[in-house]
Length: 217
Figure 1 (cartoon, rainbow, N blue to C red):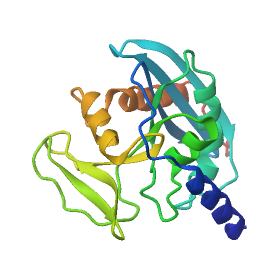
Figure 2: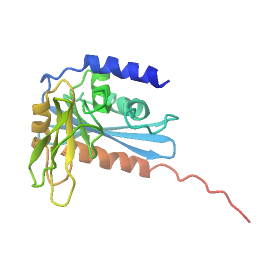
Figure 3: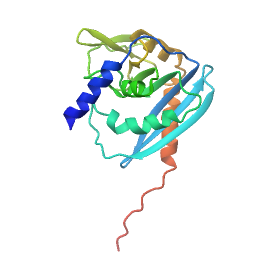
């Protein structure tokens, strides 16, 4: 099974375009929350002034386990459905996950970007692969290197927090990925579309019923 999934990721990676074909007219974010075997995706789209234009969610049951490097097959189906429901259609999408900073250069952001034909940027909290220097001052960034290739950036966005990992997913360059994240930072660790998607996914999770507990005499 794993070889089949690796072959899918190889096809995704072969279709990734690292050239700027995005605009910031309608910028979106998508994030996932989890409840037992449910994957809860929350997506939000904003206009260039950061006014929320639409929200969409999707809840799917998954039997695919948590395996680093294969999150696209666990989180991708629900995330894609939520994004496809957004109106207007995003012209740039921030994804909670890796882009090309992935062992096979096919992280969740690249997977979603290729499937939907949407410019994507991956934002993650941990480094899956690659080497880097840790930025120590707010606003400071450093390159994330895999082999001899720059595949993203580390960016320290606030005091007292670890740097976030930024990588292009599809239809955007490594340089522009960092630029758009800086552009949409406000007072949070995450760029605004990511922060709002994160909060929305957790709000949707909070509306789900609590499973009944077994009663014992």
